[in-house]
Image (cartoon, rainbow, N blue to C red; front, side):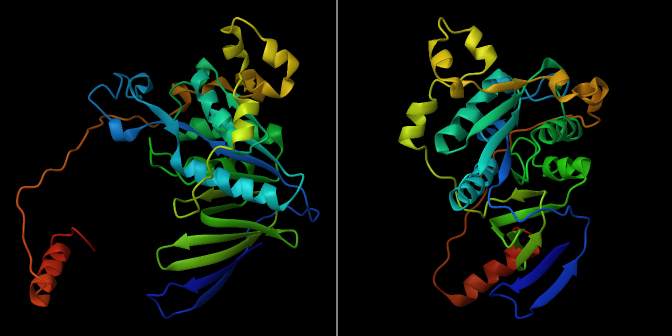
Length: 316
């Protein structure tokens, strides 16, 4: 059962309350949470050029700088706050991509995550949201967490579909647009940020939550953890090193890599063959000013400007 209490924004005077009933899983009141954070390494869309797309309609990631998806960092921060509050909780960061995506796991370890899993296989290449959520859902089932937290959407697609699709494939409730996440009296308590105010939502575990950009920013790297995990590597990266001394002496530096067989996926639902979505074209749009308007502090001029902006749909 999800209980939703809608609280008014300062711009609105109406207080609404509604209860929504959805299938949930009964469970014990828990003091230790097993949390999986879904994170993604994305191309920096602030630097999109003419070579950003391949001929087959997929993103040419090799020519774009790679960054930690911003809203996934917000999701990680929520997981870290729960870990701090509930001693003994465990955070696993799950990401899907090429070998270089292991950097996302290292960045998470530097901030307080406990371990990570990299889903990497050539057969995952070209996956859209449908194929991606299929692979991630199988990996999450294998990890068997109490709570899954993800960013609302990735900046390379802006679809906001992967999180909800993972929840649907797993058959568990989902809560979107989260701003704060807490756990109390055996239930997850989530504050959602909506256009007309906020909602306080409760749900039994397991549940998947997507976090929006209004949530608190992720903390910076911890100096001690950065030193502890700076040599963390995957098997693929280890093969390229001259020595595996650090990993042999410190097994916590080993980042797990899973492929198609590890999660028991059917190949027809992966990669391009399992992806009905195709990108036909991408453009780098640059706005230039054609004219300017200088205003005084006269209220009539300001009012007329606001009317013009509303009429041409610049605002409103």
